[in-house]
Length: 286
Image 1 (cartoon, one colour):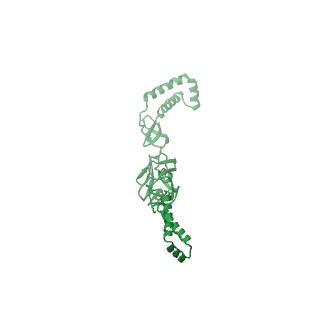
Image 2 (image 1 turned 90 degrees about the horizontal axis):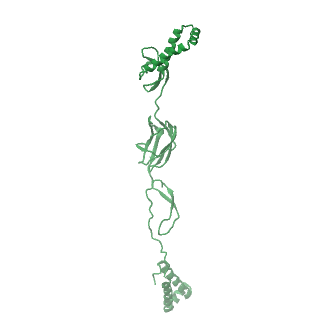
Image 3 (image 1 turned 90 degrees about the vertical axis):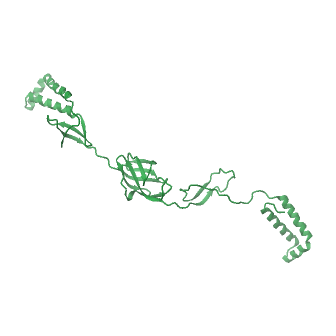
């Protein structure tokens, strides 16, 4: 209990009207007040004085004053104007938030990893920061839990902090988050592996460390021609081989005998070789 001065003066005119009305009420109910005074073993004058005093109390106690951040109900004790605390309700200052746990403690330097933050005092959060990088991409689920997508930044270990009107959480080993050094991506499969030259085909790429890629390149490379061979030219080539065989029949017969095959087999082998080479070159050789 302690005495304090009210921060606003009571409405003494209203109190005067209230006090003046008490004797009038007593006169209208004098018999009842006499019985009440007799029951208390006091005179009616004493009862009247007590009623006047109590009426004054009632008029003064209605305001609520704010003193040093707390709310007090004030009741006067005498005619000096001083008051005492009959009842008191204290508004305590809300504590700054605390971060006690992260469900994942590392992620890509490219950001985007979903992190669940546990602690206390998160309601009313106005900012979540990874080191010096603040993000607005978070959702407060309760006073003790929020989820946030890590913003991108250079590889390092940083503290995750939460800010509310009551302050910013203190840092500790429980709120540390590590941005990993990115590694070169690898491709293990692409689906589909072909498409029209006009482009526009959706391609699914499977591999590792693809979360931080900045571009995808389709590199051009040489492929076998899809044009059909010049069969007319190849026909001319076959005829030329047969004509050459006839012109040099003796030489082909000796070659066939040396290989222990017939001249027809040697001729067929020559034609097959010539046709294969022509097809591979797109039918350009005659």
